[in-house]
Structure formats: C-alpha cells, structure tokens
Length: 76
Image 1 (cartoon, helix red, strand yellow):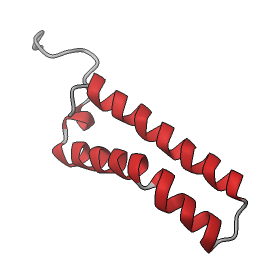
Image 2 (tube, rainbow, N blue to C red):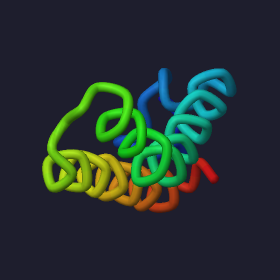
Image 3 (cartoon, rainbow, N blue to C red):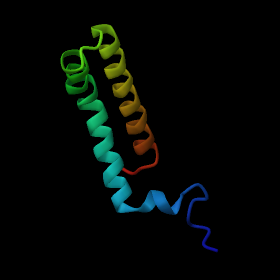
C-alpha cells in the first residue's frame, strides 16, 4: 500500500470528467442562479418575487459552498 496517497482521497474525485462537471456546475450555480433562474421563476412562472430571489440566493450560496469544497480538495 502506497503511503504517499492521502487516506481521504476518493478515486471518483480524481476523475477529470467529474472535476470538469463540478467546476461547470459551480459556475452555473453562482452566475445563473441569482440572475436567469430568478428571472425565469419571477416572469416565466409568475412566482412571487421574494420567493424567486430567495431561491436564487440559495443557489448562489450552494455554488459558493461547492466552490469552497473544490478549492479545499485542490480540484481547481
């Protein structure tokens, strides 16, 4: 067993496709969540403005948490 590898690294986290997917998901959540998603809910589906903004802000926060995870795991 190679002791140079970290114990907490998962083989799935080392996939370049997963890294690319998670990076793109992070970008979409951070930039599209509070803009186009809010507009789609508010104007397109006639949701309440406050509810639309709350959901958009939630997607933004999820994107930031995912970004922090990716940085902490040194994936980006």
